[in-house]
Image 1: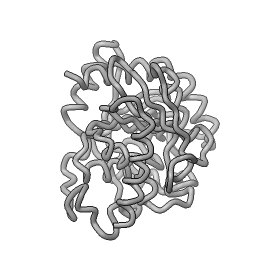
Image 2: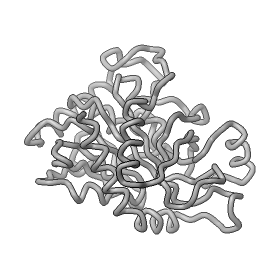
Image 3: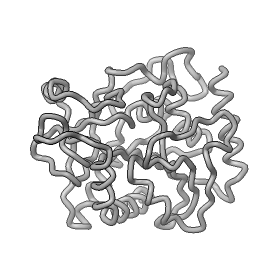
Image 4: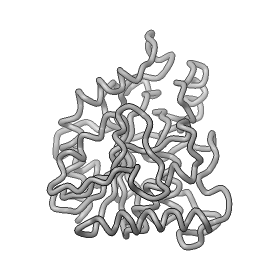
Length: 274
């Protein structure tokens, strides 16, 4: 159980630096890390200082935990995550969310920047993830099962908590904001998908595509955590529009919607307490 020991060591280190106990965990995707800057009385812990922990290498992912208050609750946010395409193994990719579990966090909000596949979506809209297609990549549960976290063959019927989705929809209604629902398809990256791949994903039922979130959601579900997944549709996927894709466009779109996104997450955090 070497991997479990690594996660436990990292969790003990982070927990020892926190002045309180976080109750909600968040993973902030590309360009969405600005939410962590709004936390009250923040405590920042760089990934590089945590024993055995990976570090972020993608632009827009600063690479640190930020603990603090948000909407009257204590949260632990990952300002930057890890991806398989960075060269990490899946067990490393999900270390952050499992660290949260060992700190006693049972509710986690996973956010990402994604490409739109559903033609009715528009750039800058937000999508609540209702399900995912993730058999494209290796499972983060591969190898010896960590019995302390969950069963060998976990059920995946409700990876994304229906109660949390309902509350997130209530928050959108309160804001007068249109919110999409859809299926997120996981791609290994780092290359963007080809038009043919996007057509195949559309046939399978995908509404959006991205290079993160699914491994973390699978690991969190295995560990008995309640997951809320939110995608910011930063661009339309390959073949949907007649222009090349770029990470710069992703960052530009997240910058444009940052105010709405931050207000939305704040309302959700408060609502999850009910």
